Length: 206
Image 1 (cartoon, rainbow, N blue to C red):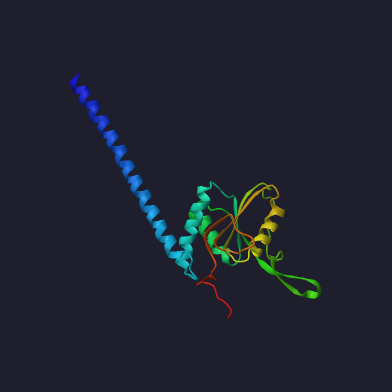
Image 2: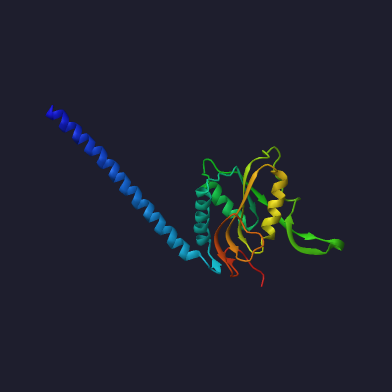
């Protein structure tokens, strides 16, 4: 009897030890992840110039917010040019994977024209370049992404366009950065700022 009891105690001890070791490892990994996220946040928040590596880190933080909200999009629509790279990172890395990417569709914008051909300072979808595939479920979960929402009008116009194609869908917007005084703010964002932010990979006319 003593031998069986000793074997049982030894087995229980090994199992408990393994569980305890796993828990310690898991806890340390989570703590390390939290520390990394804090460092990333301090590195990229409230910046005026964002490098491509910082943009990638911010996309990771954006994905984490979306995942915490348990939102799993069927499609990602990216406002060009700023949202295209972010959409690809989300599709093949942070929300989807290389083997099972989330389908990405690009949205091309143009300035609206008023009477007598006068260009109005409002961005609208360029429907001659943007074609939403037919046959998509009207109740799809859709993620609309861009790098920044300055005034919010581009984001709002793109959301209105998507509502026509997904009238029963769950359409949610996401940007890395949002201006504090933006009229249309995304559901998900990483940083709010009052500064004028520029991205290294983009060219800007002086």
